[in-house]
Image 1 (cartoon, rainbow, N blue to C red):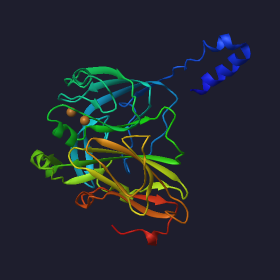
Image 2 (image 1 turned 180 degrees about the horizontal axis):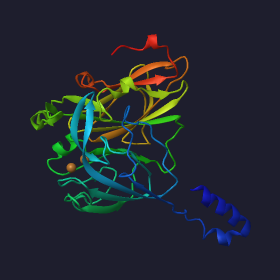
Image 3 (image 1 turned 60 degrees about the vertical axis):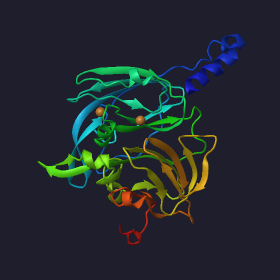
Image 4 (image 1 turned 45 degrees about the horizontal axis):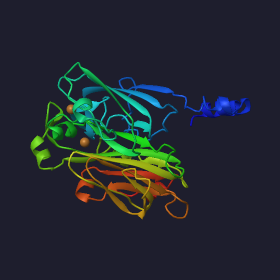
Length: 335
Ligand code: CU
Ligand code: CU
């Protein structure tokens, strides 16, 4: 219930019960986000911090599709097919029961689409391919909390995902996640299949993608970017990480070196969280919510790596660091 509604109820309570019944409906508040105007920072690293959802319960997201030059590893440029100009696309955050409206605008030279795993909706209508210059609008009510993959579903889907067409949507439970978190981050794992560079751009290698022979496996779109730019938390922080594995084909065995997850909500399942776990697999096209504490005397001040523990993939770029407090530089691990 919104703060405004509570205030109205308090006043109505004084006035009498008859009035109360007419003001108990939650005041709708509208949020409109244009991801053409609000682009996620990608330098020095993709901004992994996520902010709480606003108080709105009616939300419109305008998502432009563009083809843009992205950097998938240090010095390696690639033609990304994007939602909102970045890979991954922007983080969408909503609340269970919200009214969500999506406006997809195709500003690219070819047909694309958008598929929300968080939506229960006929795919042939909402997720259909739209031509260059066209747009599509659809609405849904997210009913199932979690963090979900959103991606282009235009055939060949393998190609559209390997080119970068995915983003995460967080669906908060109606009453929020159980327990407090001091910091929240989003981590999207994915693979790139890049061949020889032509005119300074690495080429798409569809044959490698067909054999799941990745050239890079990355967190938030660029190999190893959080080694140089660790996620920053304070000693004592309880940290929530929303992990989506966009694939297109490999799994993510998500693990933090030197920490144990207090709770993991697999696919946002609030009824049966995993407790005290080391590594949890997030399948391609899946998501899970990881929580851990960086407590003094346990996982306190220091440096912690987050990886996919499938190490052939980690060695291709799926390693990042979490820096807790202000550790001595001499204690930094050498990767
Ligand atoms: Cu596409
Ligand atoms: Cu899908």
